[in-house]
Structures are given as C-alpha cells and as structure tokens.
Amino acid sequence: MKKKDKPSWGNAGTENELPKEDSKEQLLFDKKLSRRDMLRLTGASSLGLLLGGGGMGGILAARKAAGQAGQAGASPQHTGTDIIPFYGNHQAGITTPAQNFLCFAAFDLTTTKLSDVQKLLEAWTAAAAALTSGTLIGSVNDNPNLPPADTGEADGLTPSKCTLTFGAGPAFFDDRFGLAAKRPASFSDLPAFTGDSLEPQWCGGDLCVQACADDLQVAFHAIRNLARIARGTAVLRWTQEGFQRTGSADPAGGTPRNLLGFKDGTGNPDVTDEAEMRSVVWSGSADGPAWMNGGTYLALRRVRFRIEVWDRSTLSDQEATFGRHRQSGAPIGARDEFAELNLEAADASGKPVIPPDSHSALAHGDGSVKMLRRSYSYSSGMDLKTGQLDAGLVFISFQKDLMKQFVSIQQRLSKNDRLNEYMVHTGSAVFACFPGVREGGYIGETLLG
Image (cartoon, rainbow, N blue to C red; front, side, top):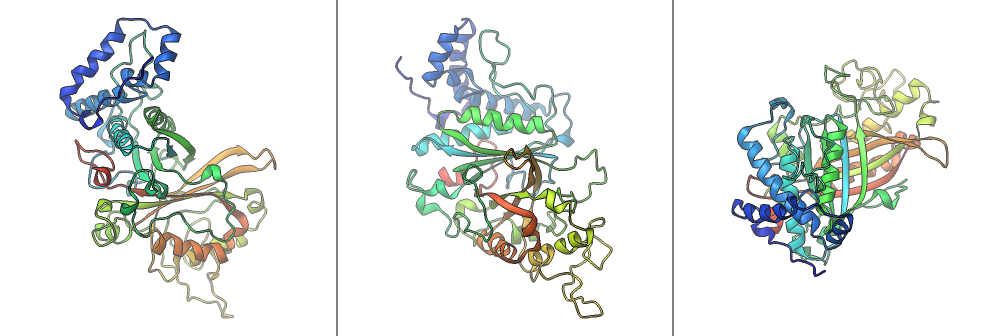
C-alpha cells in the first residue's frame, strides 16, 4: 500500500479544512473495518490520521472541540474552579498551586524533520486545550466500527485542575533540526554531582510534558493521549508518577510533607509576587534568546530515599539533618514554620543552633539565590533486588537560570548535605519550558514559528 502524504500542519488549524478532514472520517464511518484493515492502515500511519485520537485527525477534532468548549464554557458537570486556563502569557503548571498528582513524561523524537516537530507541537497544543478543559479528544468516539479517538478513561470526570507544561531538552538543539544557534548559552545537561548514581532510564529527553491534576487518572489520560498523538514522530523515553497529600486530606492546605515526614517547600518564593517571579522564575529579554521570554527552565531529579535507614534514626538526628523541627516545620530554635532561618544563632556553648551542614542551611546559603520548588513524592513499589521500598521524591524546580540557581545550590548540597546519607539521585533531566501560548498559536511557536 502506498503511504499517503500527510496533510500540511501549517494549515491544519484552519476551520476551513475541517469539512475535508471530516469527509475522510465519514468514509470510514459507513464501513466496518476488519482487523487486517486496521493493521494495514496503522502500518501506513494513516489510521491515526483518519481516526483522530492517535494522530492528525484527532488534533483537528480536538481543536474544534476545544473551540466549542471555549465558546460554551465548561460542560455541565464542570465548575470554573476545577479548570486552570491553558492559554496565557506563561504556561500553567509552574506557578499554579501544586495539584494532588503528577504524571511526568519525557519523549525522544524519532523524526529528523523540523516540520514534523512543528506539526507535533501544533497537535499537542490543540489536544492540551481540550484535555485541560475536560473535553474528549477527537470527534469519533461513538462509532462501533472504529477505534475511539479518545482512550476514554477520563470520560465523565471533571478537568480536576489539569495542567500540561511542555519543554525541550538540550538534545533538541543538536544538529538534527538546525536549532543549535537558538540554544540558550547556559542551557545544557547538568554537570555530574557528588554522589550521583544516575540510571539512564530516568535521564534526559528531547521533549517533556508535565501533567498535573487533582485526579491521577485525569493526568495519566493526558499523557497517554499525547503519546498516541506523537506516534510516528516521538516515543516515550521515561515516565514517572508522583503524589502529595490531597486537598481533601488537608483542607487547610498546609505545606506538603515528603516521605521522610518533613515539610517540603516552606522556603519557596511567593508566586503571587509578580516582581519576585520575574526575578526568580521567568526568563526576560535580558536573560537569553527572545524566544524564551516568558518561559522558564525546569530541573528534575529523581531522588530515591533510603527509607529503611531513615526510619531507624532518632528524631533529634532527623531534625538536625533537615535543620527544622519535624512537627511544625519551623527552623530549629523557632516555633513558626515561616520564621527566618537564623544561621548565626548559637547555643550557650557557641555551637550553631542550626547545623551548617543541615539540608535547610545549605539550600538557603546566604539567601541570595532562590528557585521555585514544585516537587512530588513517588512510590514505585519494591526493589526486587533488595526487598526495600523504591520510593522518594520527584524533585522539580523552576528557575530563570539553571547554572546560577539550581546548579549552584545542588553543588553545595551534593558535597556536604547531611541528608545525602539517606538518599541517592537516580534520575536527572532539564528542559526549557516554552512561554505561554495564545489562542490560535501553538506551544513552541516563538522558537519554531
């Protein structure tokens, strides 16, 4: 069977083309396909094109559906409080209050054509607008003769504050796509840190998608469908799910605790302070290439905790390790979680109240370098080799300069942090998260457009 040419993605977003695409789908609506037909079409990369959810046709349908959703507002079961707007100056999922669940995916591109990448990002943009509004992808979800365009597991569920955040890794700027000249000067893979025990299956990636939602099935559904859409252009490299306490378990919305029992994120900058976000998170015109204006850089570290060892340590040892009280989250010697970290305080013998090699002391430094942490816990069951829990932290931070912010802090921590005895870094990746997208545009347009 001769492979059909794919339609031009540059024109895919125009409503004028929808009837043409719909006419292709209609040809299949009236015919029951055999399993052999399905396999043949799949092999020709045409089934997804015609059906939707797994490919191009689905994008057109999703764009149309997203537009309808945008016009009509949310579907009846949805409330405005569980929809996070997809379009805006910045991508959602960065300064957005962390949802209950994370599903993070890194992708490797299998194409060497920049035009294919552009089409993929256009397709992902249209799908993301639908997914975050609680709309099923595609227009073919009820024909008994066709595979549904949407995988369906989120049908009837609310959007659950789903956000999708997209980024490109350093490898995206190699010699495959002619983008080397557009790579930000300081954007590269992280250097090796003391104590790293990185495993390739948790590292790197050409592109990433961070899906967050208050329902894990909604987040998983988003990643699964974006992976279907990428078929023929990109493949999954690795995924990692994460969680934190749910909003219903902590109605007061306190700082989440990690799996070592301590509050994580107390020292974060104020995301409601726009000036501070411009200083800490968002890349501006003076910070690098123009295409990153309004974007940011993501650092991810998969950190496995040695939980069994930690559980045998005393409370005083644990608090000295973090430099904070476990129950309140306050710095040692203080009562309020958000009290200033007084690293000059000493006891009667002159010994620092907060150990200089504690995690909080080293992470804080002189207080001049900050980053926005947005981490989740993970549990991947049991390590079959050791019989111990494979659980820990999906550390995620956003910053405007990886080297000046994340790397400088991590270098201090990797050399001297007391916490290193109880953890090991097994995964690492960095991504340049694109600026936000306007309606009618697409993610990455400032770079590829």
